[in-house]
Image 1 (cartoon, one colour):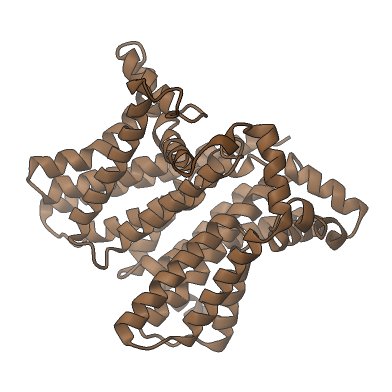
Image 2 (cartoon, one colour):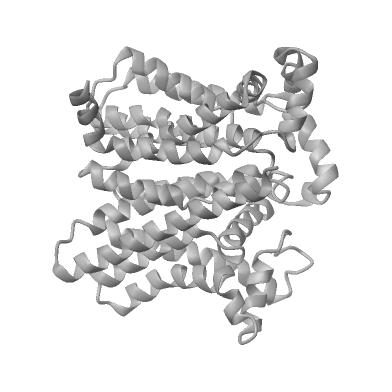
Length: 456
């Protein structure tokens, strides 16, 4: 037994176990009984779960499986939610490792652990800890697990029948959430086409999972409750939304995303852009390349994080970031003649272009550039929130899929970085590693104190 345990932990899985334990410690201090959690607890106490969530398909939401799971764990025990939530975070870590960590699993999984700790977990308390985690972290974890077959089939690995069932079950659950459903459909369709072009044949299991993903999205789009809810939310939260064009909504998703990352501050974005900046600076001498790579990082630290220092000296610069962080459509018919409101849109697009160009520099080409694909898929998952009337009410919790896309891209950049064995580059790697680990530890402590202060 000892030998089996040692072999299990030697392959980098010890970092996943540590991630589970650390998350479990945080969750043990939480009682999920506020906000939406309280609403669900009250309703399922008076009637069977199916009697409550069944009618909601027709008058509120298509998230039938997610709400069934939420009600099931809440009705059973808060400790069941604590356990499953911690397992889901570990599953997310395991899946990222399986999908994207290539070599030296032990050291790289430890770095992945700290990168995941940088995620601002307190956002998962915004609608109630249980309700928010089941609607966001659980679909994230199951979506990542459901993507593992793509990697295995692409690499020519055999998938056991029992694993096929587990991956497909995870896909069905993840497909019950709108953002993850879109990610699954786009990713499976893209790689199914790639495999047909590369191998000149159809992979049956890819077809099955692609059909399941598309069916999940169709289920969401045909749910009558989603349209009832949308009309109610437009009337309550965003009365002008029906007047917006497709481009207006796309621009809204664009500027609010960058507003959260820069105007309001985001440590995951800081870590991601830091890695980009350091890699390009240490591997390219061209000044233009360095400037392009430097711009996203500079904006990340001069936005929210530098505001307290700059506010009294460069107040107009910080006022620009305040505009970017506003919860409204910045560029519309009323403001189109004011350059000030066009600048945030142009600025946001410029940042994304700089990141794309930097990722092309780091991974040398467009073909097989997994980091760029992951970044763009994550970014698209946040852009579609521009079409939701709750874009402002939902807050930054809808960023989670984009934030984890940046964590994954950061992991891929880190693996490129440590391929360099020059003495000076090893020193740089050590400093970057220490910085990320400090950020992870500080964020973990920050979340722990947040939980202790907000839980009565």
